[in-house]
Image (cartoon, rainbow, N blue to C red; front, side, top):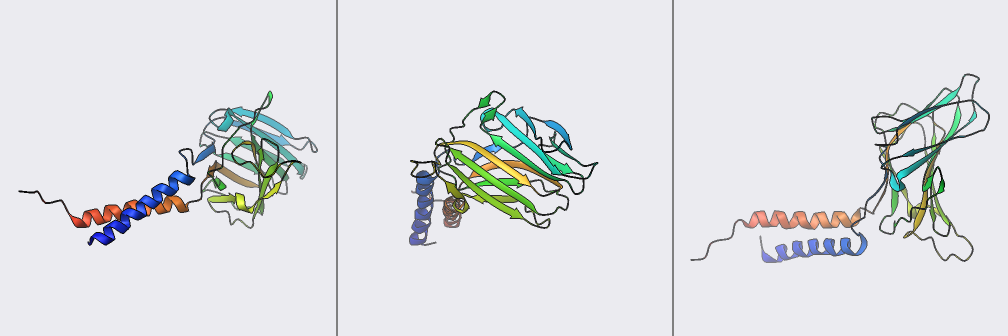
Length: 243
């Protein structure tokens, strides 16, 4: 393998390292909730439009998860069940023809607001990982809302129709609609205080994790460069001992 090829591969790896250092600080992947703690089980019977609000503590970001469940309409025997079990999945199920809404918010506690002060400037999306054993469902509507310290908000909505739910669903920041408070120049991704996921429209679904993740291109560049250097090094063979 010629020296020019090896030098090119080294430069590719260096470019990846430089890009990562410029755009992806150490806290590039931010786990919001893996549902490994804060287990609960709640069945909401039909009580009009009165929502159920519950708080669970644990390893989720900010230490607390606020869950709101509201049933809008259903047959007389309808109800909605929501819970986090030992399998680390937020599971939602309801009787046939039940219309419900489930929302999880991070940045609140039973005592009131507890702003996260989260730096998401190195990320470009919220990734929701769904359970891989989903049962068939009707259209599922999701909205992710981020509030910055000025309480301006970024809102991203996705519709997933006809049981076509992939394991990972990405809510890209660039696809969101930003509403700014008076006097705010831009949404402050370096200081996000509240994160809410809101879902409605399906009878049965589950979430394994919620995380903020960076754009993958920089990491792919870094890995490609390092892999190329390793491959070229193996092709060159061991260095000869001098005599």
